[in-house]
Image (cartoon, rainbow, N blue to C red; front, side, top):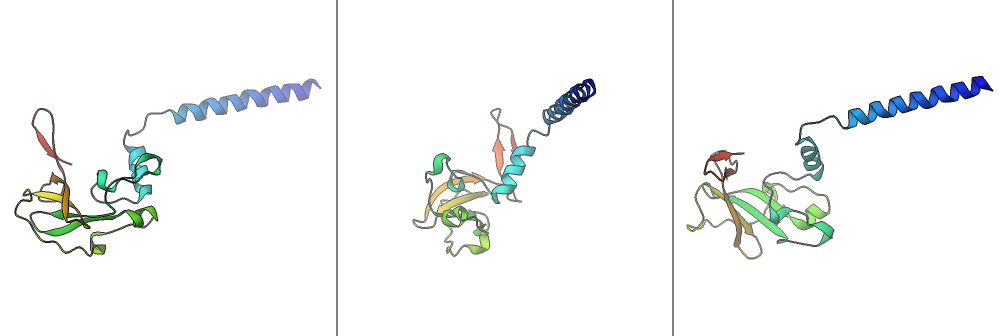
Length: 146
């Protein structure tokens, strides 16, 4: 009986040591963006991210059902998002868009304009560099492409 109780006690101590080791490893600091990057990869979202192609909380709809992003320097579609396809788990590509781009002189230069394809309305825009990277402006006025 003493042997059984001793073996049981040893097993409990070893199990506790394994648990502490696993918990210590689970709380080891990681790259702060690694979890976000993994979540983004699983979401099958590519290109620019904004309110027009995000999924709101609680399943409520937001934004237009079909949008394109147009580079104002080239007049080409560089982004396409269709909400129905996204909700069905399908990925969309700029080449999927059937929208006919008509450049407008009021569009900001060196930018991407987001257009609601049902209304032809520019619903958002943001500056980009020559490679299409978004240009961010910090509070102190400095800019960087990211």
